[in-house]
Length: 159
Image (tube, rainbow, N blue to C red; front, side, top):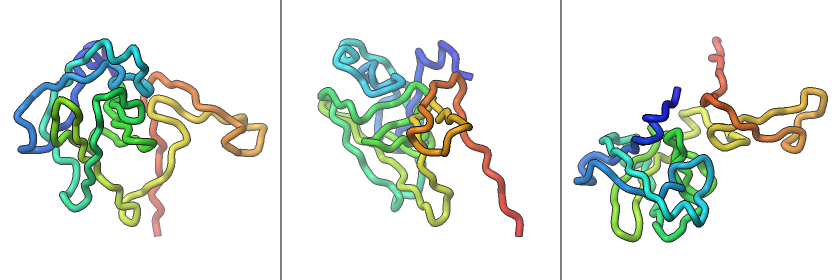
């Protein structure tokens, strides 16, 4: 359960041996529930950085995020990083470099041959609410905000 204290002191992973800093200030809009707006660049939030290498070096890809009013990339209130249209969970990315103009985020490229990968209709913090009396289509429902993070329960097939 997320507390007010967690929101006031958010944590982001930094790649091992890549940064000498333990805190990072980002525009407040980068810690919200959606892309930052123009006014979100007036306030800044301090993030604590902890060392965590999310995956093997050969599975990493760097996304450079500009501090100049980027609306496609941000960190959600529950620790996810949105790079373009893809959301990465906290254990699938780390910050590798920070300059005055940008920060570099190393993301883990999913191995869908080995790991289970499937698209999610709604962003983190929302679930797809479907009208059970209608045929299932994206238009037959909508994304609805939920208080607690939700993830599907997956059953293991036994041979």
